[in-house]
Amino acid sequence: MNQLSDRINAIEESATLAMAAKAREFKSRGIDVINLSLGEPDFKTPQHICDAAKKAIDDGKYFSYPPVAGYPDLREAIATKYQKENNVPYKAENIVVSNGAKQSIANVMLALLNRGDEVIIFSPFWVSYDALVRLAEATPVLVKGTLDNDFKVTAAQVEKAITPKTKALIFSSPCNPTGSVFSRKELEAIAAVVLKHPNVLVIADEIYEHINFEGGQTSMASIPGMFERTITVNGFAKGFAMTGWRVGYIAAPKWIADGSNKVQGQITSANCSISQRGALAAISGDLKPTHEMVVQYHKRRDIVYNLLKEIPGIKANYPQGAFYFFPDVSYYYGKSDGVSTIKNGDDFCLYMLEKGHVSLVPGGAFGEGNCVRLSYAASEKELIEAMARMKKALALLK
Image (cartoon, rainbow, N blue to C red; front, side):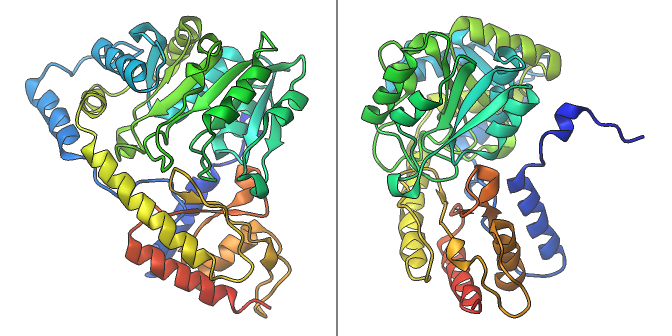
């Protein structure tokens, strides 16, 4: 009878996963597609992390259900990392380990939000923020940053958006999809606004913390007055090339951690025991492999930035972190190659896939229809070839 719930009908399929699937479809037909749609490191998980997981299997001690919030030693290690590196006094009781940062965010939304609550989302935003707010039957309120301001929302915009219904605001820094990084001064200004409103919480997504070309990460929870008002989201997928291991976590005031633990206990229970042993090795071990990856991302950013500048009509910011560009491609809207006419970002990405054999993600899914997201988590050779294909395909549009 096909009667799905209203909450499921209210959300869309993830645009990044949809484009990745379309790219795989083209590849299955023998077409050489360069996939720049997924936010996935192209590096292998560092060996010492894999060795720790193998040892856990061989030891035979990790085959029973772990505690829902994660093993105590992993939670303690995460708390210690934040004490030492981020100047935030988290304890193990503040940590909940989940099946990826996406579940971490979903847990928080379900634990905190009621119908009628509003969540301010800094836009452009990671595709799932909006969907997860609506899944929790709350209302997303998009506050848009502009290309001229590096896509960053200002404190004045936040102040204007807050209403008596505002329960939280959410953003990522470094940002997916723009690569922008909020400075400490910018975060302090936003915190000053939040602190005027006792019922407003901040969900700070720091999943790209290690891929930051500007130096150290500023955690919102480290700003005076914000420890009790901030839910920090992080994980191992990006900085440690552990996407398939599915380990994310929140660090939050205990009452929020307890609520998230309660949600998770009814949905998935704990994260995979063996993945957690790998995560422990990652967070307590040598960061040299991570730093080496970041050096490569830094080089790739500059390669892609310089090649994008050579394509007429493309406007892009200069990302300070993560591994994305979010160029404005609206110059090509209304143009045609005689067969296809580009009306919007969806058309642009489909045209690029069909004519250039490069897979991108439409910006509308991230809150900005004039842009597309391009991941440079690919080899230098692939990136150079992809930019050449884009330039050639776009030159056909008149």
